[in-house]
Image (cartoon, rainbow, N blue to C red; front, side, top):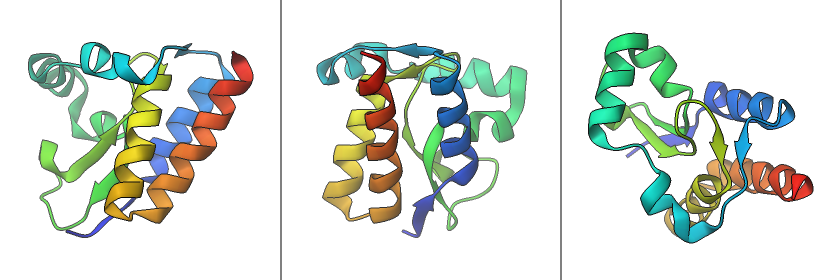
Amino acid sequence: MAVKLNQRGFDNAKSRVKEKRVVLDVMDDWSEHRPLAAQENEFIEKHGFDEYGKWHLGVDDEMGENTKGRYKFPYGDFENVHRCGVIAAEVRAAQRKYTDVEVAAAHLHGMLDELM
């Protein structure tokens, strides 16, 4: 798997944090706050894979462009950045040794903690 930082997703997250379009929750909330598969599918139908990809910090270039599997490390609910999603991405990226994704998530984590 060739997962690397999705710069568009990172830029989208930074922009939303600066606009304070965030949910300052705790790590354990992600399982409840993460969009369900049906919500993801609805978002893709309305906005396309290009917009869907902006809500992920990682991209797998080995997966097809118009597939959900291409995008890794989601961090929000298609409106707001969730602190719990950023932390989950940071932890999982560290576990899988995707350093560029881990560093980006850590940066976002710091930005969010400044808002608390």
